[in-house]
Image (cartoon, rainbow, N blue to C red; front, side):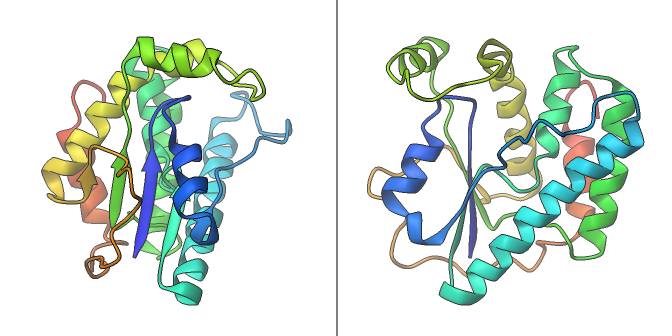
Length: 204
């Protein structure tokens, strides 16, 4: 079983993962400062697809070792570029390149959909309260990330529509149950991505 935990900045996903499943954890990507900018969109799309693939392969490895991988943020992070386009903060061309790169990776089995996605979407007021209560952690571009909460909801509503039961709209207070369902057979099915994009409002 591969579980992804997602939500906007300050949604509590990292805290929940470390509290309940640190031994099964695949950490979120940590920026290095060497990420490509938007001067070369195909290269930028390829870079972020490679990051996604590396995290997915880490989840596959963790699952083989212990039977469970819990990912701090979704390895298939295509929702991020779509959300940026949705609010007018990124290029539609970049989205097109990222879809192509991620679709190819899914078809090759290098990337996939988590079996379960836990989505945390606190109110805007609660996100600000949590940010202010944690002065130690730097949250880059926090205001932008707050704007991405609604597109994030739309993305996972679309996924829930095309793959019912995959999305859960909470972080369980006691962690995951001891008994989990079997892994889904369509983890690496590009048809799921195609259906998801078709179901998205406005941009897809």
